Length: 270
Image (cartoon, rainbow, N blue to C red; front, side, top):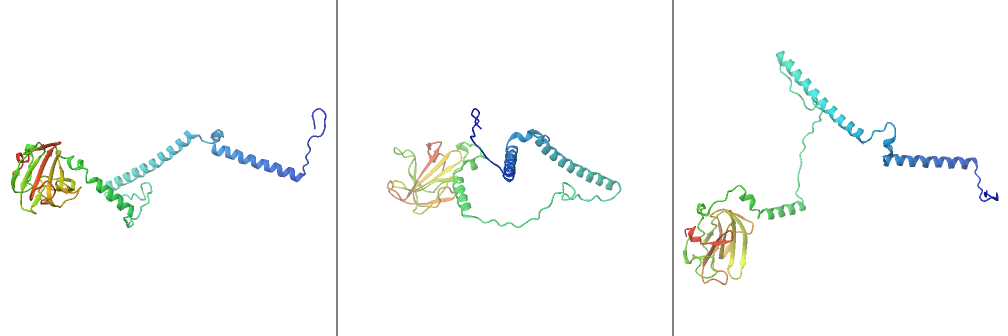
């Protein structure tokens, strides 16, 4: 009805069934809304008897403490029972952890078969390649030794035709030897370069402890690859005549320490 003219504005009519259905629907919707509010909001903590977060944490801790107390009581009972049996001259029984302490269920061992997948093989190969250059693993247990106290193997037995510093940029010695003669590593280390260069032919470089690097040039054939761990005196190449800067079969050998070239004749007897 209109407030001033009292004319009819809107009219509706309900039967008893429609009124009952509407009331039930509204009641169900109200129940659902209240349930959602209680389940997904913090209003549930205001319900009498519902524990808050601190009380729930305290309940969990008390449950853990009770479980620990049960285990300790079982251990004490076993200990007292063994003492009683010893005093009576009997042999104490061995405690069974599966039944006496915590009722821990034993698990039977099963045979497990591990299969190497393609991804595992790729990952293993990647790690192996990275560890080849990890010199800190080998040098961590060694102390720094002075050069005078280091023993160097002779890379090859032969005649030195060009000594150290005979010409500008000549940072090593040239040793004449028979073609195909064995070239040995002067110390233990890891190969950091093994390949071909235009001027010096087949070259191999080895990183040694104490920041020492040995270089072997003009080889006929290389026996080691980059990343290989090499022992002192182990064969690494064969003497050759490779590269443009060579006039015959010989070995050009260099020895570097902390980035500074050394005269090999002061440390090695050729």
